[in-house]
Image 1 (cartoon, rainbow, N blue to C red):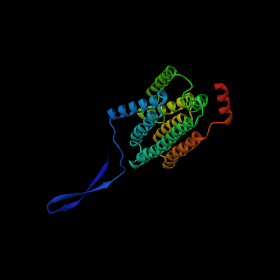
Image 2: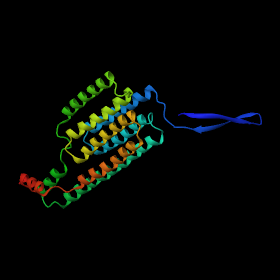
Image 3: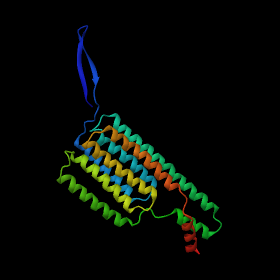
Image 4: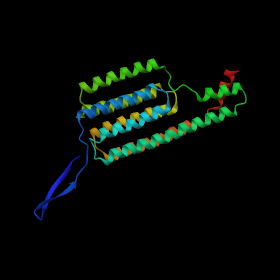
Length: 248
């Protein structure tokens, strides 16, 4: 935290100072930078590897906090808080969407007339989150991590610090990986939010444009609303009929 102290006079033999606040930015240390980067790695890995939506949303929130710590070294302090708030609102929108999907599943399962109808409901709502299994996701994530470490440690990009470059590229690559491997709309949305978070770090590190920074935060909320709307759409009738035909 940086402050400017100005000597303004003496009163009764004692010196008095006036504190003039300037742009408040966090001065980080290498230890905190390493911890933040580890947090980004772990949170993105949780979203890629684990199918549980509660764990994925918690990882998304922690990821926004870690990204805000990196942004606090680049922009004045109120702006990273806005990033955390936009991420929290986006996660809240997705949380209520997940809860609504769970309630719809229980309602349709209770209204099923026989075992065949219950099996159809389970197949409609219990779709696989990812198109590939866990071993392939671990292998793909390891390749991405090795590639990002090699790029961030061997090249410079417009004078961006190494930790900023690694954090931004890692979130962008992890978001693309989630979007490629996911089958569920909500998980696809988490990948898009990871991508925008990494883009926000690189954009802020290269060009401190408050307009673009604000647009990125607004886009997260709009993306969460669009994803929630797409996830709330009922299954297609032809899919329902095809699944009933498979059961029969």
